[in-house]
Image (cartoon, one colour):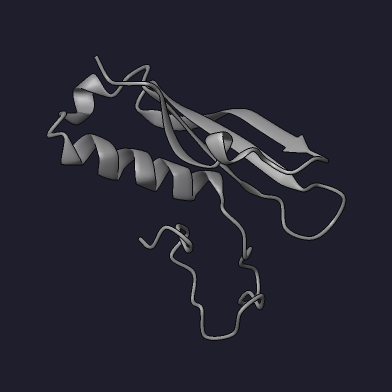
Length: 104
């Protein structure tokens, strides 16, 4: 995944999403980044329980300037535990992928 295109969406037509596909970062994209991180550290899936990851990015069009999403591993699934939409721009320190609670 590219840092400016973490969702892996096609960049052939910037700003244009395929029918039924959002053009902004989704919780499933964050779960994929979390799994890549955990696999990269060679942590077995059975130890992922309770780990938590976040991602902050610009909010795109509309009234929101930024969005912070967090997912946590619960009972073998990634669950969205935070969705924070903000009307002000996101500080650089809050942007991108974050480890909130690492696997034990």
